[in-house]
Image 1 (cartoon, rainbow, N blue to C red):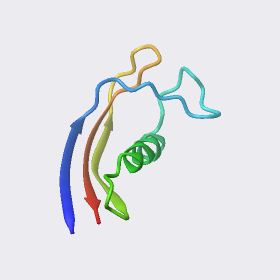
Image 2: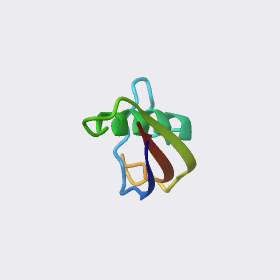
Image 3: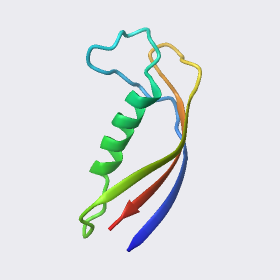
Image 4: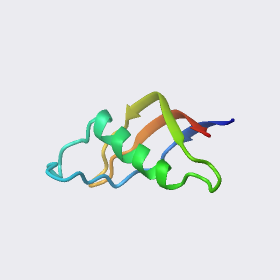
Length: 78
């Protein structure tokens, strides 16, 4: 079993969700969905599953079409 603690402060993230107004801040729930899908794609070879446990997700101040979030998460690969 391998556990990796991951603390991230993300640079501004271009977030566009289908059916989402371009000028509205995405919700934390929407961000979590997109973030989890992205880190699932980055799962290392040799592992059969990856669990993402969010400790904290805070939205930042939007800048144009960029929506920054500060994320603290634990990735568990097994």
